[in-house]
Image (cartoon, rainbow, N blue to C red):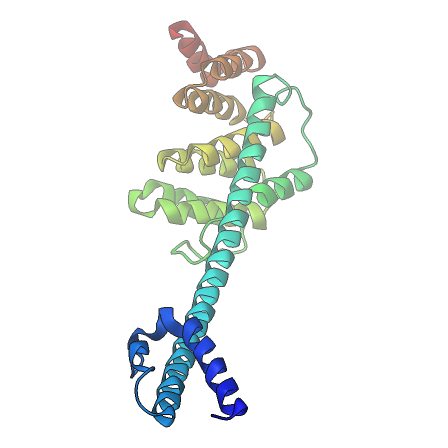
Length: 262
């Protein structure tokens, strides 16, 4: 046997040793390589080598598919993390507004320019679905406000009412109805069980429109939400602020009743 042939057989034998774990589907078992002529053994080794190559190709394809799945999952995780960050930021904004009420800082603030107030309320408002059955705005503030109130009275169109009031706040930031619109947004969200959103809108009324007739009731509702969530200390502080800042109002009377039962 020539040295070149021995070298070739040695190389193929080493390849067999590497391919052995994956050679279950090979056309010829390894145990039979040692029998037969040199040509037969070379042929058998080539078959095993080809089987190994096919398995290796399959493994490489599987790895590529797995990598694609990993990339997809990574993208989903990043999207979920972004949404979570948005929720955390939203909660912080709500807690800041509620904290200012319980500390007595918001009710004593002077009312800002109406244009700035409306713009701030609209900018910070929670987003709702744009596509809805809310009535098309007419261009007249009184007409559009009354249309939104009509939706409130229809129990089957509460979501449309929310969208209508949000659109009203954005379109008519200078309207005297803006505090009322924010109050209704708070009440509608509260009715839907969205207490954090409700607290945001109620607190917006007190913070941005402390002289509005809706301010006492809005502050009282913030206290109710805090009490609903089990934060008795903060609820009590808010009730005390209502009584102190808006004495004689219905909101103050309701707050006093709550304080008496705590």
